Length: 370
Image (cartoon, rainbow, N blue to C red):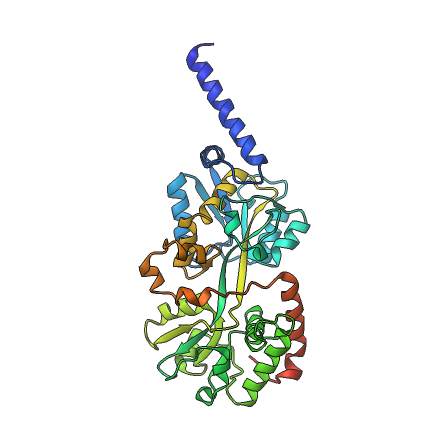
């Protein structure tokens, strides 16, 4: 065997060794080694990533350009449950219909881990992810979050509310709505709990009951509008104030283009986060490309990419403190100080207040939201 052949054989063996090492590691591999192994796989399969959600269009394009690895995109309109079912349905399939990675609601992470559908991996920036929003062993980890905000039609509302207690004032007669029915919609349930956190001064054990009382008082005062708030109802004046996720409110502001003028306010207290999580399929056909995707998403570049789509990345406070977020982007967002005291509820807390709010809304508040 000549030197060229020997060198080629050695090179192939080295790459194979790198790939094996990267596959077997649950912790961040050396980036050069991971890139080499991912490029050998040549593809990444994602699912449920609409290009207009959290700026995923730019993130997908950026990853492909940076690493030269093709991204195969499955069903962009799928929900979290669909993503889990896609893993289950393709356990023995190494073809293009098997997702390598998922982006799902917080509750789906632990259940997918328990079902043996995920594999662990801790990105290089692992310690920057709040411990309340990640699995200690690395099977799933928070990626971005929204907080409950006030979306305000500033053409109709002269004095913008700054905190939950303001909504009880006479300035807001027939003005305040939720973005869903609190008897069934997660966003609305979270809003009731967030209001309760503010009223109970952060006491999580009392926030569900305090939230129900707050909305009962809001309804009795004539300030609550039992209509599901949307961009159209905001513009029409039916629901001049909507309590909803900040990224949806900020996106509405862009969509409405000043007609009406929209202000997005993060309340001073009761700042509650709704978290999504990333995970890698236990049956991923391209496990190294999946790990490289995670490293990309949790890098400064990826985190700022999510923020450009108004979804606050898990490393937001760290990036702001280090002055890594472009000023032009910060100018489009509520002040960074608004997010300093964000509360990340645990899964057990979420389960508890969901049960309280959905079961007792009718008797406590008596407003039929539709």
